[in-house]
Image (cartoon, rainbow, N blue to C red; front, side, top):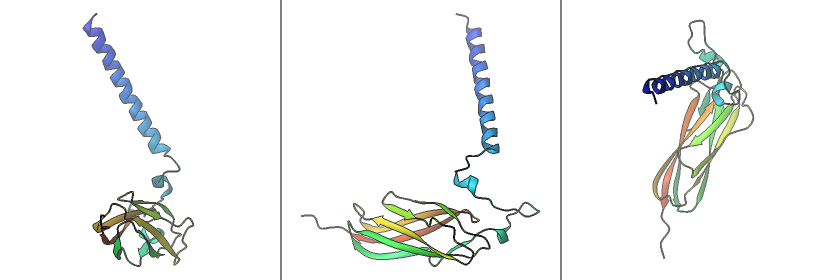
Length: 162
């Protein structure tokens, strides 16, 4: 077999695959998934291209850190992070993720009007977790910046082994 033809064929395939990537990137930029959080967040810009903070929701937690104290291994800790929308438009929370599968956040389903209050619920399952614990929850919404963080802390005492 002639190596020149093989190299030429591989080169054409390589160039064609690069072109496909460029097309798909352009399509993603022009037509993002309308269900993705980033596509739903519309951050208004002023005439200079800077974020116009006077036109975005703002989430202010009563406290960004809650200490649940001391609990026994196996307990499920349930805490609430109350917050206020201090922005001029309705606050919509799209997602909340934790640093560990043992920590499950729950966001409000309905928009929070300007001046309105809401609660981010957090459940922490302490099974197989002992010692000092610190679990971070990242909340995504139509705020600037789009992500806010809260932290659940405390100590988990091990169950005695029999």
